[in-house]
Picture 1 (tube, rainbow, N blue to C red):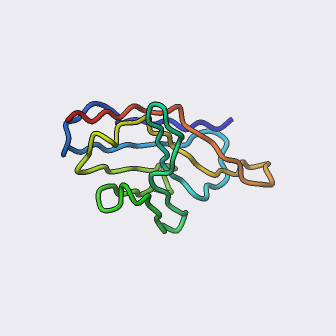
Picture 2: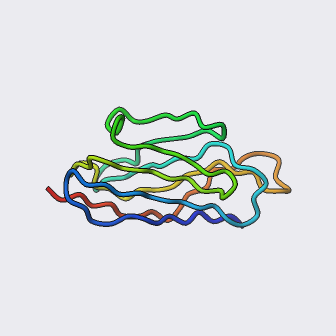
Length: 121
């Protein structure tokens, strides 16, 4: 069993900051890409930021320059530092990771339960 547990969401005023964390635990052999997706009410889930095992990052245009993704491979943890938050950043944020278990042959995609981020104007 593999679990992804997020923390750090909440309510913040526009212009403020939040830091999300997500830790993978359980039967893990190795983790490739990790990322954060978000889903606003009535909209499809979209990629916010992604990071490879070696630290190469990719951001949605809407968050470039404001969000920073990082990871600690020793702790199986990915972070999302969100600065200069805007009301349109309001969404449920989901952690995502490509994980291979010790007896697995291929990588599988795992998701966290989601954490609510609300930005007030």
